[in-house]
Length: 150
Ligand SMILES: [Zn+2]
Image (cartoon, rainbow, N blue to C red; front, side, top):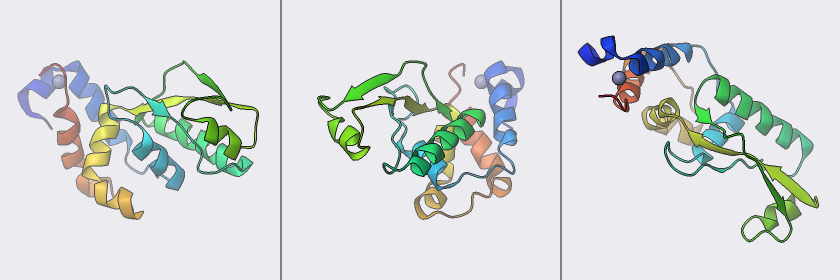
């Protein structure tokens, strides 16, 4: 996949393996939400937010983040931000969570994650099954097209 350049390029070979690594992976509704909420690669990462204040919702979001990182679909910087009720943009979130403060992590999509969002746009929008197998070549082409070393 990817022609002559890809055969000589470490970036392309590594990403080709990551594409194949997606076979059989399931992305639940929380993983899909976090993936779609993350900013595109190269943009400032956006806050990872649970979809509600409940403990199960927060736990599900944490698990989704771990699954997306393991699949190399998102990048989560080490930096976290402590948000309290005086925060300019996210004070409402802290109120919704019914806490004094919240510690947020941030995410942006990797090149692979961006390619997944592109190739599976319809499935991600409507909750359809992600059939990696039948779109594997298309996904590999979309991912390798993002290679910075071309
Ligand atoms: Zn390359």
